[in-house]
Image 1: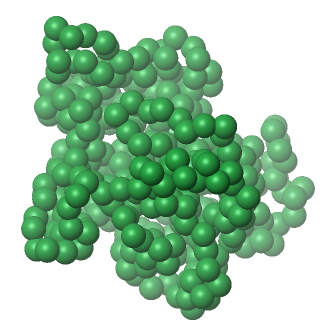
Image 2: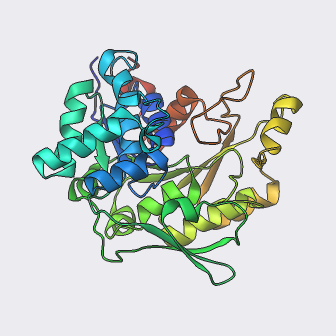
Length: 348
C-alpha cells in the first residue's frame, strides 16, 4: 500500500477499547500506537503483579494478542490461555501471558523490554506501550470521604460515587516513548473503556495531560455506550464528557464520538440493564452543552450488534463499538482537519 502522507494515531486506554480503535484504524493510519493502562489489580493480573513486582500486565497482554497478525496463531492464543486448576486456587484463571511478562521482567530487569520481547513473539503490527513503567496503585476519594486503594476497590460495587482519582505514587511518570508518540501524532484517541479505571487512570501519570495539551494532534474521546456498575452508575452522557474535560483542562479535547442506537432490540437493552449497564442516548441539550465546551460531538450508531450478550471471564461485558465505523470516523476527522481528500488515504 502506498499513501501520499504518513498518518499517525495514538490510542490511550484499556486493552479492549484500545484494540477496537487500533483494529478499526488500520486501513487509514501507517503508524499506530496503543498506550495501555497499567493499574489493574484483577485476579489474574493482581497475582502476576505480586509475583513479578510489576505494573499490571493484563491489558497489555490482551492488546498484544488482539493486534497480532493472526490472533488465532499459537503465540497469541498462548498469551490468552488461562489455567484451570482446583489444586492451586491462585493460578485458577491465570492468563499465561501475565506470567510470561512477569518472568521476562525478572529475566531482563526491565518491564518495557519484557513487553517488547512479548511483542516479537506474537508479531507486532502496532506499537504497544505501557502508559507508565511505574508500579503504583490507583486510588480514589469517594463522595462520602472514604479513601479506597487499588483498582479492584475503586471499581467496587455498592460504594459511594467516585469523587477524585489519584495514584499512590503521586510523582509516577509516564513512559517517555508515550510522550514522544503523543507529540508526533496526527490523532490521539481516548477510550472507549472503563472511564475511571482505564481511561482517566491512564491520564494521571505525570506528563500525559501536559502532552495532550501541547500536541498538535486532534484529541478525540470515544464515549462509552453504557454506564458501568461501580464507576459510572447514574451517569448521563454529559457527565462522562464533564469528567473528561475536567481532567484534560479547557480547550484540549477536540471531538467526542457519541453513540446513538435507536433501533437496538429491547430484550438486548434489558439484558444489559439488569446488570446495571444502562444505554446512553444523547439528548439535544447535552450535545449543545458539549459543543459549548468547545468539543465537537459526532453522533452515529456505533454499536456492534450481537445476538446475545457476550460471556467474559470475571468481567461484565458491554455494548461494544464497531471497529470499522470508529476507524472510518477517525479518518474522516483527520481528512477534514487537514484539508485532505480521500485520495490522500488509500484503503488497504
